[in-house]
Image (cartoon, rainbow, N blue to C red; front, top):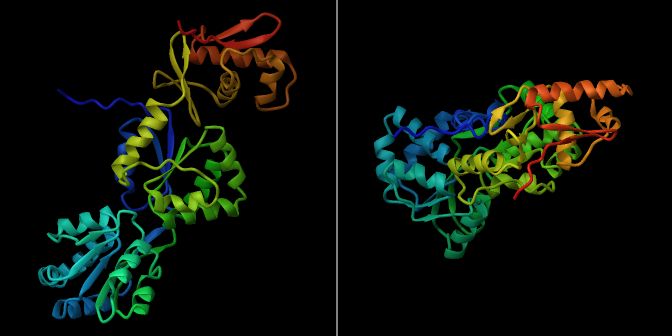
Length: 372
């Protein structure tokens, strides 16, 4: 049997702020019908000092460390790629097989396992603080500890371990750099604060911080908070570490129980598609999204004016809205009741004539289906 993915995200618009694995994340959402925009909030600068990295690698091969701390999967893979390109890959893996390995989270563990290495301990919280606490509790005095840093650089691991008496080796494979397209990030912020997305997705804490800094520069935090409070925007993070910059600014992002990209995609599918608030109309289930509306997950040809009217009618489904109320949400400053009547007529053409009822001398309301 062919497994056909239902386009339950049709009509939704999603902003992906990641660079690493952005294509994978975007593709998974697009296969479910979402329109995806990518605006990487940060870039990745690989191999800042390849000669220095190789020199440190040769030293570790000749004299393996007592402990290796692996903070990111991409960083560890990049280190192995660099070693292999210089003919050191096999020797490095053999040397590390003699070393106690501590991994910061499941991604780092996965990269180690792919190389045939098994970590002795994994920080499930994905925080460097948990690693430091473990090693200092066990005692590191006199030990040689190699630390592969994540993209933001040293976040205090080496200083803390040195304070405990360890000798450390620094391994920097990549760093976060400026966004590859700063103008795209600026446009994404303007669009997000204007209500142009159903969700903004974050996969790293530095990336979340960088994007929010652009929002703050545009004085857009209040606009984001209003959209989130109204249920018109979802901020989603792959895990609690990534979510922290959002939480510190008062947001409650969507975070999957399992801190994986696939789990995040499933959460978005459920939240934006399957469990999204729907209004039962005579012809199907109506859902409102950032830039359009859908009927049973099929996009409707609704104009921006029609969507504004539909949002008003949907605020309290079944409640009558006057022509004056409709004029207040329509573009322009018309006070002519005929303008409201024409807007409703065009909306009926887009979503079905039976969807919007006229209440004589009072206005209009959605033809909400009563549950038996």
